[in-house]
Image (tube, rainbow, N blue to C red):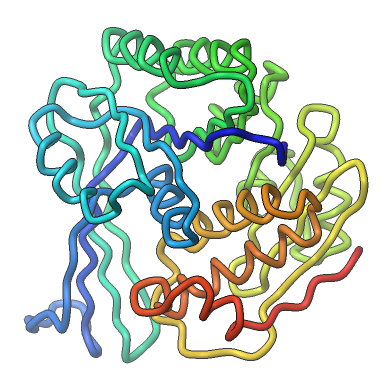
Length: 316
């Protein structure tokens, strides 16, 4: 998958993410927000933004609400040519999610709305739009919550269409949709976290490198690469050529874990493209995810993160 011509992220249930930060807050308390920001998000757009931070050009596709489409386009403009927005307008308004971050006590609360953008009509239009930009050598990253069960068949049709056009398919979702899409044999890479891996296999997998590698190998009849996110413990990657574990060495203050898994996947794709070796790509992935957790992706460059964040990667 390292020889790809373009990376296309596809989000079917995107959102506006508003993050409100407090220097300590308790339930029921009325308090002024220390800082806040709101931006177009969802897992797919987070991956696009992470790739752009590393200087990697990509295309952001998927659904977006027609009512706030221009607002999204304006918000994405600062990313310039690094992220080419190719969203498909869908009837309605994009959902808005809220994350409350208590920086004094190192804790978070996530408030999520349901997405109602998906419809037969919108998904047919998305399929047509993707055909215009997907070609041999593309990597299509389908990331985030999938539409309700009645639309999973439509999503599978879209994924198969991209695969038939020569694209490599990366999937980062969970639940029944993940199981159903994997059964098609169209997916090359998945990125579950530990809990999602347990749900996928129906097993209580221990969160240790050896156990995660054994679990990941059970999926290699369906995919080529399994990247497992372990949060603060780092990550594990499993392929037919071997398995590796990695973690950050040393530390800084964790400002937020929001989006760290998305940045991990973006880093892995970047590392795989640059060096075509899974162990090395895992090291890149952990650096990117750590930079996100420390807040470096907002105030520092990718080259600074490469120098300043130390990781340990070894075979399992």
